[in-house]
Image (tube, rainbow, N blue to C red; front, top):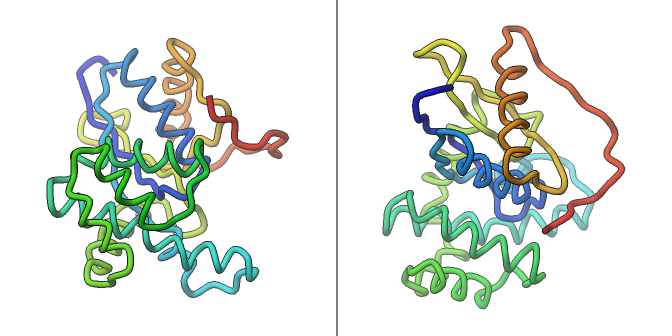
Length: 208
């Protein structure tokens, strides 16, 4: 990839693995000619009709709040605000262990330079159609048997696009190591007929 390209990532602020992948992508942006664009998917939407353990179902019920706030912010100030808002939300959720409540939303919105009153969107379903539209745009090319992170990137041909789940990695590589991982991911994801490479996880999310 020689010309500058746009890479889209779909995230749910709840997911620690998506958070690590997003931090990796921001590192890749520094060493490869990419512009990372953030989009909203929802684990709550993905799992709403599934039979889940009670503890995870409770988390999915709470998970509507962050994604609704993200959609409201994007509608109010443009989708480009998702980059800073996701950083503000993710830092509080994954590093500072905030509860998914109004304090989280108002602080994150304020840090991102947005109207803290948008926190009210967390408990309103008025933007759920827009949320589902964003979610479906990200998930349709990869299917519903995966979650987040989902990435859409330029394919090997000038007019082609590839979409994939992952990578799931911890901790996030930095500098040229981040770029090399991107090169490898793009190579395998752009190979026709390539679907999966996986091994059992021995480490939990490492945030650094």
